[in-house]
Image 1: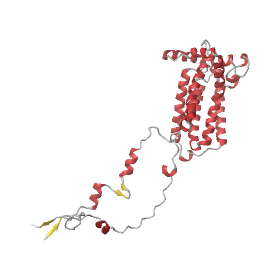
Image 2: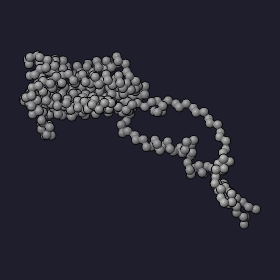
Image 3: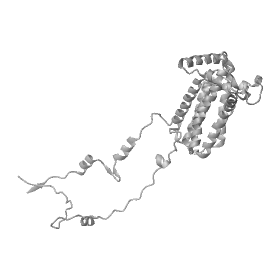
Image 4: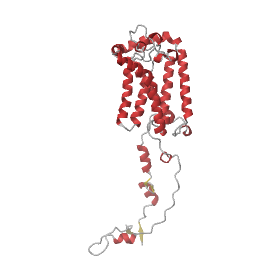
Amino acid sequence: MTTTQPLESTAEATTQSGPVGPTGPADGAGAEAGRKRRSWIPGPILPQRFRPTNRPKLWLEIALIALGYYLYTLTRLAAPSHATAAQQRGHDILRLEHYLGLNFERTFNHWVYSVRWLAFSMNVYYATLHFIVPIVVLIWVYVKFPDRYRAVRTVMIAMTLIALFGFYFYSLAPPRLLQGGNFIDTFKLLNPWGQPASTSDGVAGLGSSTNEYAAMPSLHIGWSTWCALVIAHLAKRKWVKALGIAYPLCTFAVIIGTANHYVLDAVFGLVTLGLGFLVQRLLQGRKVFAAPASPAVAGDAPQPPQSPQPPQPPQADATAAEKPADADGRSTAAEPVRPAIHPRT
C-alpha cells in the first residue's frame, strides 16, 4: 500500500507569489503610486466645486478689478498720516543698502537724467506700460488659455493684495521724494504730458489720486515678472518669449533710473510674487501653468463597466503540435509533474 505526497495548497501558493489580477500582480498599481512624488505644499484648501477650470464670467473679472481699486484707495487715503514714518524708512533703506553694497540708485539716476531722451522715455514707460502690459496679458490668457486663466489670475490677485498690506503698514517714501536724498525727480523735471513742473505732482501728474508712499514692495517688478513668467510658459514664438523675459529687466532699469524705487523694493516685489504663487497652490492645489487633468485621468468620473469576456476554448492540441519532437518521435514538451510515490515501510 502506498501513499502520495500532498500537493501544495492553492492558498499557500497565492500567499508566496502574491495575488494575481486580470492584468498582472496587484502590487503594480501600488508601485506606480509610490513612484509619484507628493508635494510639500498642502492643499487644495478650496473644495472641488470652487476650483473650476473653465473661463469665468467677464462681469466677475470686472468686479474683482473694481474691488482691487477700492482697496488701493484705502491705502492712498491713509498715506498723508504716514509721511513722517515714510521719510524715516527711506533713510533706513538707504543705510541698509549701503551696508549690503546695493546703493547704486543715486549714481544711475543722475546718469539717466544726463541723457535727456532716455530719461524722458523712461518716464513714459513707467507711467504707461505698468498698467497696459498686465491687462493685455490677462486678456490674452483669458481668450487663448481659458483653462489656465483662473490660476494665472489668482496669482496676480494674491500678489496685489499682499502688496496692499505692505503699502498700508509700511509706507515708504520713494527716492525721488526723499528729503535730503539727493535724487532727481525726472518725471517732475521732464514731464511727458507737457505740464509745467509746478503741477507735475506724481506719476502722470496725478499725485492726488495715487499713493506716493507705495514703494515697498514694488508692484512694477512683481507685475512685470508675472507677465514674463506667463509669456515664457504659454507663448509659442521664441521672439515673444524673449520680449516677455526682457520686460522685467527693462522695468527694473526704469524704476531705478527715474528714482521711483529702491533696489530692495524690487527684491521684495519678487518675494511678494512668490507668495502669490504659494497662495494659488494652497487654494487650487495645482501648478499654475500646467493644463488641468481631465476627469477620467484625475479619477473623478466613474469608469464604465466592462462586459465579461467569453471563455476561450483550450488550445492544448494546437500547442502540442508546435512542440518539437526528439529522435524517437516523442514530444519534448514539458509534462505535468506527478508527485513521487513512496512505498509504505
